Length: 368
Image (cartoon, rainbow, N blue to C red):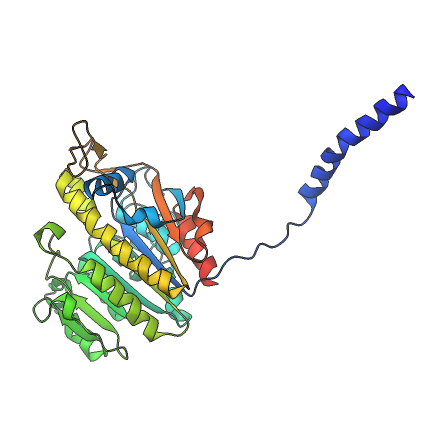
């Protein structure tokens, strides 16, 4: 009897093992991916966790980052370097590949790779970008252009004539109008193509009212836009204006990329006050976009960065409303980068993953 009980117990203990072996070989049930009609990707160029923390503590310990229900971490290294640059980082988001530092929308063989913005256009979605750099800068360029080196601003500008992007806002008007290479006036060519074109010499950003029947472009500066601390204030209003414009442009949905470009520049300059003012401006923009998404109900909002800049730290002596920063470099670092998500499909962005996975996850949520 005792032997029978021992045998029976042994068989019971083995059952879970048999079940696990069977489960490993069995087909996994399909998991439905939540769908979003619209995706808004917000990039804080050079923004690491310390940059976010500094902005929060400076702003009375409050931040719109606290509104996100999902957070994760992404690995930002490039194909050529453990420490990426903005071109390779943005190309990873835009096209889902690791490429070399300096590459704009091309792979390691310098061959063009299709971007999520181009895919969205092919599927009838409206598309847009709002940035606080020039439109030909590395991050926005990586979503529309295909060149082997990020320094080719005039060549990058020509790609804006090859796309049907619905809403654009950023600096760099001179690369469209004052071209040394070919003498073309891309500013006029955009008008001839049917774009409603406005710039900083004509209207303030707050008074812009784009015609919903037309593609729209706003040049915020002839070269680099001003700092937030110098009065630049268009990022939040134009980001919301872009979202509403794109919503009117297509019933199929939209893809919008927003970049707070100059957080990175503050890091390169090792200027803590510059970083904090840009992060606070970005935080206000995030808040307005979250308000839009919450009211809309069909919009996925993602916030991340291409890399960290400055090796930034909050030093002893800092307090709420007063940040004392320190730096380890004037370049980039290889820190893991935070990712925040809100809206349909947000849960996909939890965990730790490659920066290229952001492209994959966005496509899944859009149903591509």
